[in-house]
Length: 271
Image (tube, rainbow, N blue to C red):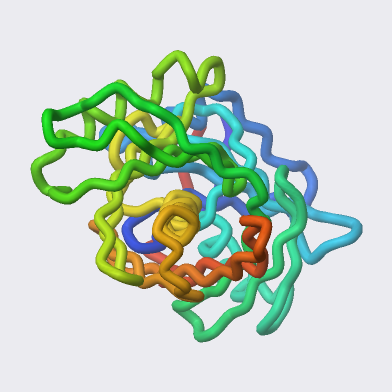
């Protein structure tokens, strides 16, 4: 057994355990240890866990794990939170480029508790048919990858949806096998979105999902061709903002996610 120092951060209620892994001996965690640390009853409690790791080419590398103990390619709110922590650690001042599994990301510290994160370009969006999850629901949805796969379903009445039930059914649907998908339910009013997300790897609804709100904004622009460069996203955990540029080919570039990143507490735990 060993003692690990950690920090707990949240971005719009999406919460993370972050561990400084810059110095040897490096922290190495098994999936069952990550699950325990993320457990809200027996551990610290979080939607995911991240390691701040050294990088030869960039300021640092972000290694991300979902709360089920499995690695994931990217987490938007996690990327913003780890940026804020790395800035406080002195790894950079106002701007940084760090590495994740889906490639390098630029980030900007707008203020101590507000971070802008450059996301991957999106050049493929599929209109897919999904099984109806309630009588009034559409059977059309957008499927795209914003660092991780996301399904975006546009709805008129967001409050009437059983997010857990509908999200679980769509997350495991055979057309997204074997990896599955994250599922976003989105109500749109011009450039204002209300988004609720069932997250793969958490296996439940989270208060916010950065890559999911990016997927929702891009899907809204692609589907309704509103001509908006910025979307204000309302989540259960607070506001996020997504900006993007759609080229004539339907390719989305210059994609940015911004929002709060707040340190909750830090401490030591034995694993």
